[in-house]
Image (cartoon, rainbow, N blue to C red; front, side):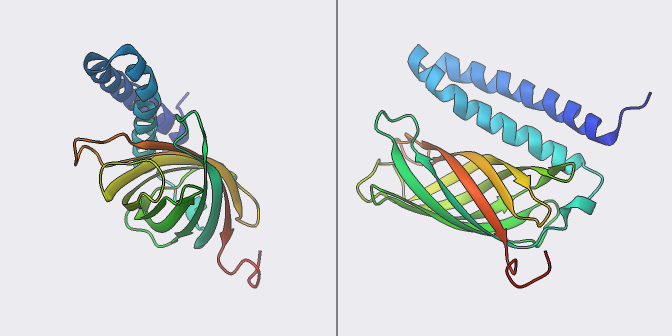
Length: 211
């Protein structure tokens, strides 16, 4: 019996993602102490998941489910999750519906209770599993203002992550996201920061247009 396209997408993406994870983790382990290797496992795994899902999206043959509008998204969560004293954050994002190949633009800003502010702009890819589950890998360039918070080593940072949403019948979304922000080695100091964020995304025109 021939496998459906969605099953082939998942299988191909999974194989690529797991191979990528093994190679990255092996390199990380050879360069780091034991404790640092454990702390960086989640970062390596996040990059692997983003890679896996992006490959699946590129292979997806059906765009019928992708007819979503522009979104305004509000998020709240934990910034720099590895710190003993957790830091709260709020986020605002505008997510465009216009598509460039498989990518959609986004812009956003986050602020923390330590007066850290990060503005970012980048691309995302929505991967639909049925009518309601949406997985969105994303990547962006970011401008960093430390405030009273943690130093990240550079005013220019890079943000990458993945979001998992439940899309309701009226196209509003609620979901959770994990992402990593770092300067990718532009400076010698590159501690990075990981975040967990709960998002609620509202279609533009939701209050006045048809639902």
